[in-house]
Image (tube, rainbow over all chains, first blue to last red; front, side, top):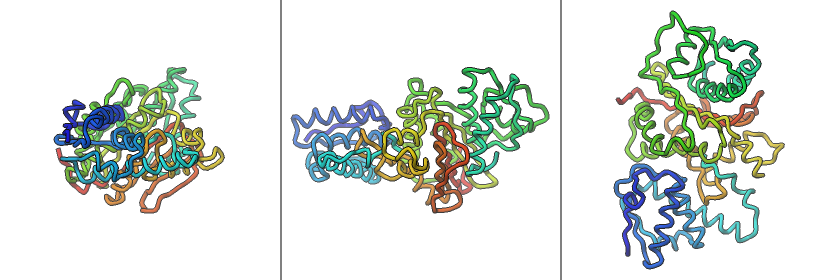
Length: 118
Length: 272
């Protein structure tokens, strides 16, 4: 199992922007090529936003067609607040829902507005 | 202009029209009270209008002039005499965040230095979430609003009334327009339906598989805090002023862009 120290890898304790989330996604994908499990160590982080979470973990689940069990079989977390894990799990749940809608050929705009995170 | 409510918000476009149609180098206004949402609104409006017309604002009431000046509003006509200074300790001066110019670090730094002290004592986790979600409001403007002048933000603590208000306004495309353009809500439907829809947890993105967490979280926090919020876009008004039940209304006059006003009860704790 490889441990990735998130704030060192991203060079910030503010995990806020979608760009930083996408950067983490790329790092995780790269590690998953050679590792069965990647542990994300969040020690030292100050803030985390839904934009970041969506771009990192929502997209990871969408790309890999993962549900929450698949996700936890490959990704572990440490040093992260419980509330933030709840938000990550919501992103994973929504990714699954979105994937199901896409697979069933439904029009996503009937279900999701444009990319506003309000 | 007093507390933000459907009646007062409908007066903002009237004020805008008054400024736009002024034939002088100044536009007089007889506003007797100004709140942070007016300051943020006027900042964006004046910047837009002044692209084609060098008009300034001339409040008749010295207190209004003085308040706008102390908030950092730039477009005042003349000087104000005999007006008492407001306590600057309770004002979060007007600031404008621009995509490409301000980073998330700038916004967070401002939130920590100027805003968080007005939010009641809360645990570390909640504080982190509030900061992250306030950042998200600014971030949405950066990414989606297409607002030439970014987003203007202003705030004030009201010690006697026991609350703190923080307002965000951008004159961009507007949430209601954006959602209708996308087809999620029909063009002929009320704008407040767009706001209501976007505020639901987890229903707010297409490109990303989650979200709706930004204002949704703040809304939940404000329910517990017994504060309130107003969200205006187009002619849609969505808020929970003085009530746990959301008010959804069609306003008499539309506004450009998106206005968000948050009222947080500060519980008599003001940390420096």
